[in-house]
Image (cartoon, rainbow, N blue to C red; front, side, top):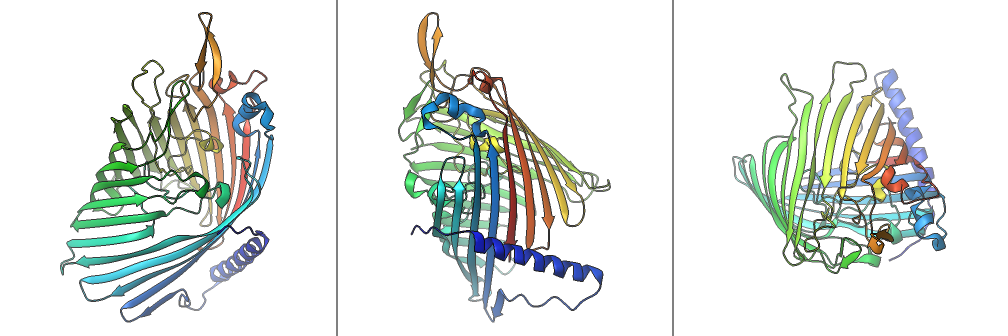
Length: 485
């Protein structure tokens, strides 16, 4: 069902909710008040527990010189504009139900629907698009022995699933284009899942089947299956090993110089390791070390690729503003143009591309997927007050391989080598960009918050050499208001 609708009523509701929430917060801060009222969205009646939730968001985005001028240079006939302005909005209604049959058995399930829209043209020239689609529709059953040490959980249907630190499996749905909401990406649940988990104390073994909720305009019929072994000695601290297999896929691969391999992902095998260590007490409290690394093989197309990264961070809890400083290097292999018989481009699958996870840059995360990319991120998080937060991000981004695709056919061109024209793609120099993203968050309350962000991407030598007329700095900004109950 394709529904186009205007975002103004949602914006008015959000602003009204923010004002009411701010007034309530101020009233609470100035003096004691009555006890918090019962949550009207949560109801318990004997063995039945019902939890309703509401989420709505409106985000205005503006961008200047998107993709640094590559479109104007490499595809001048397209008449790609230098400025973009658009408004994204979505609303999500959800219900989660649990029914305790007996002490060991609990049935559970959930349903949710999302309405999303974009007004104006986004970076991909999609204009005034919108959809109303189901987001969740799943059922499950849990069982545990009287001690609680041994547990079994089976579920299936349309639901979210995240593996490890979100390097490979996190966002199971397509966003943008006919669904709108390119940058807020509200759709995340997989269209069909089958999950089975057996847990004994701190150790769990999980089997999974995932069918992503792909865009109607670009359904590549992906199907994944795998197993996941996880050890979690304390909440928030874990280590795991996983194996993922692409049972079917029409997703194509790009090979240097500009060859497209149809159905390249079909048969892909991925070996994944992930971990997180963040002690909450003792002399190392505030320190964190997390990471994820994957090795990929596919004999059908002779693929050998690898990628991953780590994050090392520390929060100075006793220092004013409680700063948390982190450094995160990442590497995602690219195809070596000198090895014609082997494909080395890393397949990022369905990763989370937000600034605090695996985005390769601020605005340019829309240009550089996590393939043929080396990225280094430095992030500083500051607590300005109980309601105000400031996050500063900087990326230095390079290509793992020169003259190798960063995206399908990106910068395909003829170059003369030894007097002979040679077809190449990618960049002639590994330096891609220097980027920053500044993000300010104000919490009106625990349910309503405002976010403002500014991103600047400064082209590196590899981009500048592709644009004889001169590459431009890519600037982007956003203002977002979100309500969650």
